[in-house]
Image (cartoon, rainbow, N blue to C red):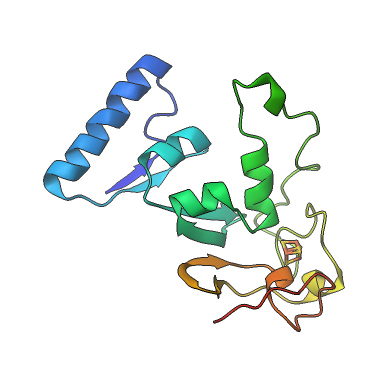
Length: 162
Ligand code: SF4
């Protein structure tokens, strides 16, 4: 079942009821949801696996706990660092991303995230990074040249298996 921003227009008390109902229905009827949302707290609550997309491309996918505990793609890291927190010690003081998303009709060459990525280098401009599984964690995959030894990126040090 595809649920596209299914709770985004609801106030918080109704949202909680609908989310609990969805979890209940999922368990009772053994359903699978593709749940599309920009609310990262909702995504964390409802998901088993998370798929992060930027400008129509998949940049990271993995088990929900792993993605939230140890995000590897710079875009995922920026998204999670911008999550609101009730803890005053965890205030976001610096914008995690600058600039506007490019036009998806005419996306940047190479890595689509390169115009906003703080780690972008020349290789990012010319070569589109492949989505590769993490070492020791086949269910987790990332599309970034920094994760591929020999990619030409100066930070490419982590061993990755295809
Ligand atoms: S491939 Fe390059 S531009 Fe893209 S996320 Fe990785 S470092 Fe940033």
